[in-house]
Length: 493
Image (tube, rainbow, N blue to C red; front, side):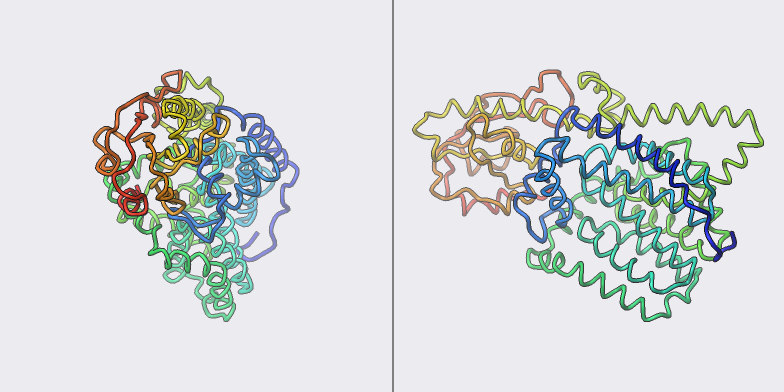
């Protein structure tokens, strides 16, 4: 195929087999361990649908609401969203390979490589904004490739729509937009910028993003406050770990593939924007102190360009072909063990949590809620009607909201993230307070006095996750009305 000629046929059957296996495995394991803290938060946010939230736009909570309504409010029901997003991503990766001229074999190998890449396995076992963001990046990349390769300006409409939807999920899509924009402006093809269809695409983006931006503006752009906190708290570590993590997030075995993909795209006049976009995005993240995984979806656009050249190179070198097969097999095992709930939860401590701490955040929420329920029972029955449960973070609070009713617990409150917007308790709630997850020296104690630790959270298997060992305290009533102290309890980090 020449740079603007007809494309190879889409390898529907082998790619379909890859996707079918992916869906079957993901579904079979989707019930294991339990909800992740973010998933519990999305379920809670989905019950309070809005145009925005303190730390995210509305798409993921909306999808959580739809999935739990249709498939049940369980981990398996919720994770239908993640499974479908994973399958769609893999199909789009195969289409990216086809867009670059790859044949049948390279298309399904690209699909399989994406399906088994560590990053993809990790973020598509559970529902998160990153799950949808990855799909958005790959969809946007494919649309821009088609625009640049064919020169058909009508693709600006699709590009604008995808960006608008992406902004309704996670603003990181702007990183990809900026990287590709630099590439097109500097290296072309610039003729696509001289069409009125570009203006149409911009208008589509603005129309889709406008309600989200209006909500954020009305609430003083809390997402920027959250992002600033991440940069300040984690920026130095993110910068130190940025390059090493680029080499391992997909798989070390795939590093030569996506590097080859960059070289191949550079040789295509329409593909240079993609070759340039990756270093541009990396520099932006290093300056901003963003998390290393933010750039990884872009590697899913570079990797397919390198698959066919690497397969051709290996076909002529039997020794290296054997090494590649062994490396790929090892990479698959590591991806599945690290990203999927295959091991018993008690075996996660150590290397698995060291690589993927999110595995540990899917265990122990019923136990935490049971602990809170035991403390709640220590409040005299005649005082419980005005008593309050206050969670230290959204995970604890969402878990108590989800599992609490079976223990007779009331609606919990928290000053963390969007829970701050969903509170405070009524000023008539003048009874004792159960503090969950607050350390002994927390600032909350200046407003909620007389606290004594009653219990310590224990998940029962000594799993070293964020909640293990957290304190649950029983306190006196607040020394001021809740409406007055609530701003001081708000926490963006």
